[in-house]
Image (cartoon, rainbow, N blue to C red; front, top):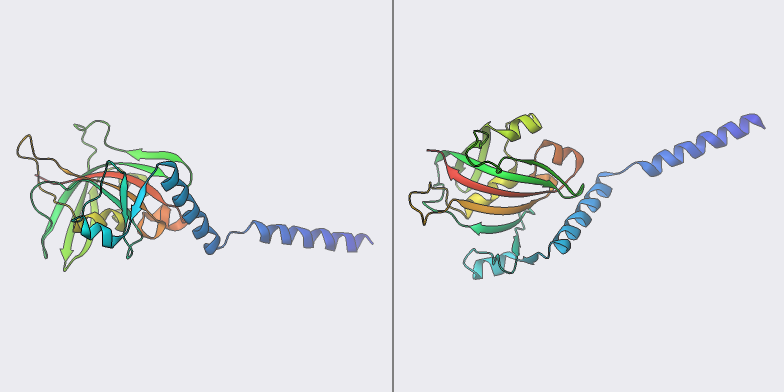
Length: 208
């Protein structure tokens, strides 16, 4: 009888362990739900790519519009398109970024380097445009130290097809600024590992 009781207890423990285990599909579902809640909580209006094109590749910030880009799954709001020119095909440039990062699922602000615009903590990524495909790596900044990787999240590169990255030369020139909802597949190493979505507000400016 005692032996049978032990077997039953062990079986219950195994079943409980199985129930606690999250599959990749479970985590993706949690991610989708977290993004949906974030969109709802912050009154974000999601437009599709067709509407984005009709609007001249712009998003209405008054209406709090974000376009959902089908290929990447990234949601993007262009706050300012920037000055100067876009990164040309075949061109490589160092791009300075100031940003704030928010863990959507954890509902937690994580890292930012946009508090003091005169600080030396600006993140710099070296980016190449190869026939419309952007690749890059960080050469300095908070993202390297925070995530122990120089790899630029793919989501950070998505806006480069739509914004200009010149430097301000007059009072009317403004550096490019975007807001992004980045799913785990387009995120940094921790996002990819734990299947977590992040929100970013980022400015882009070519290094002097």
